[in-house]
Image (cartoon, rainbow, N blue to C red; front, side):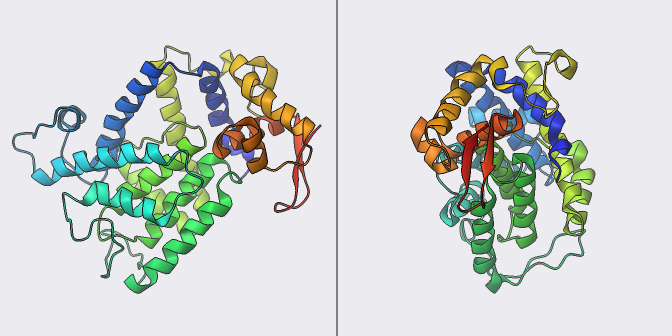
Length: 328
C-alpha cells in the first residue's frame, strides 16, 4: 500500500514520539490502562459479558462478579496474563512458535487446560462465515510459514500494514480450537508495540465492521489494513487526549511525508542523529549493524530509519539482501 495511506497516523505517531521519553510512572500507568482496555474490548468482541469496569475489578482486584459466567472471568484474567507476556517479547529478535503457543496457553489454560498452548487436532468452523479452515494436520506447516513471513517482513512494510496482515493471516490459519481472534489481536498489537507504535483498540461497537473487513480481506487485504489503520489512529488520539495534547494535526509543523523534520524535535534528534552519524561513519550499513552500533533494538532503529529516509537524510541503495543505508 502507498505510504500516503498512513500519513495521518504517521503525523500522530510523530506527535507522540515528541512527548517521549515518558516518565516510568506514566509508562506503568499507561500499560495498566490499556491492559484493562484491550482485555475488555478484545473479549467483548467475542461475546464476553463483562463490562469494562467489571473487567478492571476482575484483573486488578482478583474478584469474581456476581451473576457473571465463570468462563467470562477466566477469559479476563487469562487475557491480562497474555497481555503482560507480549511486553516480554518486545526485545526478542523474532517471534517464535513457542511464543505464540505461550500466548494462547496463558489466555486459555483456565478454560481448557488440555488444549491450551497446543495446535488444534480437530476441524473447526467460524460461526457466520463460509470460509473453509485448513485441515488440522496442515497447521504446523502453515504456522511455520506464517512465522517465516513475519520474520521476513517485519521492518519492511509500514508497521500498521504489517500488523494488520499478521492478524489476517493468523486468523485464516485458525491454529487453535478456540481463542484465535484474541491471540490474533494480541499478535497484531505486539507487532505495533515492537515498531514503537500505539495499540489498535477495537471497541465492541465496531464488531460488524471488523468482521466484515476481515471476511472480505482475502480478496482485498487493503480493506482490513485500512480498518486497522483507523483503529490505530483513534487509539493515538485517545493517548494524546490522556496526555493533555491537542489532536488537531494543523497544530503540527510537519513535512509532506508526514514526519517532522529530524532536527525539529529534541526526542527525534537524539536517537536519529546517533543513527545518522553511524551511517555517515559506516556507509552501506544494514539495520542490524546499525542497531549494534547505536545500542538500540532492531524495531526501534527501523522506525528511525524510516523517519530519516522520509526526511531525505538517508537512502537505501542496492538489493534488499545486500544493500545498505547511505547519508544523502
